[in-house]
Length: 109
Image (cartoon, rainbow, N blue to C red; front, side, top):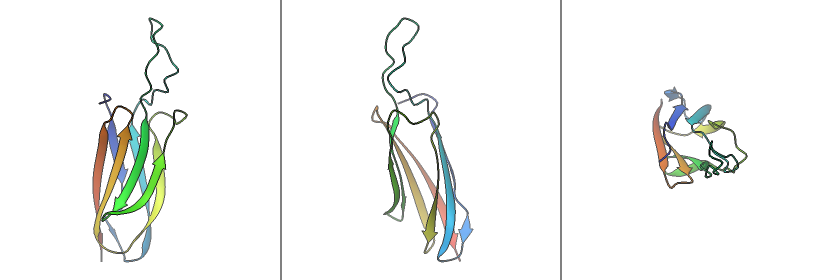
């Protein structure tokens, strides 16, 4: 597991049925490309978030595949239609097998 990885997510707390909302995510991660070397000249192994996904009540909203060219602390902003109250589940998968998750609830009224 990479050190200091912290996911952050902003989802509105409430919405009306059928509203289009904006979701913002950021995960603190160094995103080592595998191209750099340490002070001793040894290659630093690749360590990136390779997949990000968001699901609402078990249905996929967005999935993104990342590569070594992505910047440190990847940020995503996207829109989603909210039909009813429920949970958004966010998942980031790391090259080292680590999985980072966050859940946010929205109330529709």
